[in-house]
Length: 219
Image 1 (tube, rainbow, N blue to C red):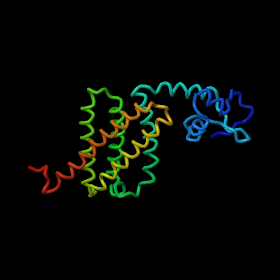
Image 2: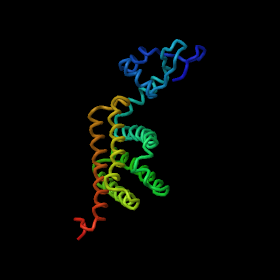
Image 3: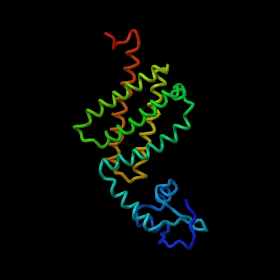
């Protein structure tokens, strides 16, 4: 939040006025402002004020979140921000600290590809999903080989993917509140995220199973 000075030549709306203009409850708008989703100023007395231009811009953005491409973009932006924040607080986890600097760089690139691939998969038409799932399997195999070469047990290798799954799903679950996406669209988003990550996790398990002398995958 930014403190508001009386001399600023902007048309300001109170919390209730801005909420009415957006068609939401004042509590919802207050939460959006506290989360940084919409710019807000504070008067010397501690009251929230919203610039009319910011309110109208925010409303236009929300109306534009109807198609899969817009949904994917908003989800990816939030997921990337959340992932960066959470990685720092989990840097001592075995599934991250085990890797040397080169392997960490490789992991970072795989994570970027995962986010990009998921974004593509969310917005892709049905006829393109099979190819994207194949790419997801390849990505899972690459991570599996990298984790295996670093001496990471399968359970810890899967913990890393579960960490990312939780972040991506949590981001999607928060989107109806933060981005006003219809529940039906969010259900489709969650299903696609889970389908893609299932393909990745199964491929990781296959890489580890193939490395075992008694593996069922060896013929």
